[in-house]
Amino acid sequence: MHNVIEADLRRLDAGAGRPPTPALVGHGRFNGDLPVSSLAGAAVSAAVSALQSLHDVNFGHLPDATVDRAKVDQWCRSSVIPLGWTLPSKWDPYANDYRTTDGWIRLHTNAEHHLAAARRVLGMPATPEAAGRAIARWDGEELETAIVEAGGCAARLRTREDWDAHPQGRAVSEEPIVIWDEADKHPSRWRPVNAKRPLSGLRVLDLTRVLAGPVATRFLASFGADVLRIDPPHWNEDGNAIEMTVGKTCAGLDLKDPDDREMFRRLVREADVLVHGLRADALHKMGFGTVACRELNPGLVTVGLNAYGWSGPWSTRRGFDSLVQRSAGLAFERAGAIIDLPYQVLDHATGYLTAAAVLHGLRLQRSGDRVLSARLSLARQAKLLIDHATAACAEAGREGGPTDAQGSIEHTDWGDIRRIGLPYRVEGIETGWRVAAHRLRSDPPAWHPAS
Image (spheres, rainbow, N blue to C red):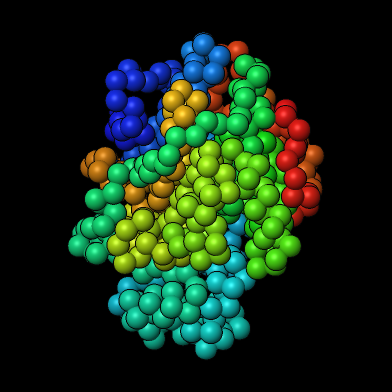
């Protein structure tokens, strides 16, 4: 799987030679019929390999690196251990699997407006139990369509065969793992100066939420990048923010407000990288698509990710890992319950591959002024996982949470935690973050001095 990913990442690297391969230690615990641990480990390895290659271009030294596959599993499940308190839930009470007249459907209601949309379609049920009774009277596909058209998020449970025959499944199967787009040549303004913190001074404008995009920018921040996360008013995800805001500046802007739009234009002009995780057409509709951002900043490296792919009828559909699992046939029914993957590997794999794409783009820009943009999706990682499916037992090692007595203590806005040790190490490079996890929109929208 690692070779497939690397070949896809390096399609623009004709004659570049063999990429560095981090040493793999430990063993993944979640390789059943679907090689969940292998996909996560390969994605982390690809990101670390890209960091090694960029370091070689910038500093003339190719450092050795190690990826711990057991710790990759831990980080994909949770990187934090609360000390004397309980983590907030990552799920809204309505976010669940429900029976329909002909199968199952999953609602994703963590965002208030997604919950409101689902409740409107269902007749405003007052409790999840009442929602379940209403859903039991619906055909699955009709309800999925109604909720999506109302602005909500839902996915009916499909088999892998259903997804293979579905127009969106067919479209995604034709997409590469990373879709590369090349613009006119333009040199990077970023000047790396600290070999021990190799991404120090790199300005990353982060328009991502929930997991996949924040995983990518968290990885970049761990090597010194100045990550500025921008969230809209009223968006909250405390259960994930504890995991994902570490090392970042967390600001808020309303892109419908003229003053905030002008502030965002300034940030785009000053950025080296833009990572966005909105629907395929969302930034364009706000006037900040790739072309518009390149007009503001010709040297900007942009990487975008979405749920269902960049072609086909669902390319602009709202989605999340748990929904793509059900759409693509990765989840299944057993004994009256839905069994999904042991962790949200589509999010984490897409996140680390997004980081790898950023680093590849920076390397090609540094070595030849080539300015690239890249696009990835959760659904494409689902295909990668299915392509490597086996007949092994699906239930290998589902139990257990994070354990790491050597992790560091972090004083967060929610309480003290122990953050477990990173799953990757690069020789001679200091990893870690300049700030602890903190709440969204708690910082001003400004770049931090180089770390």
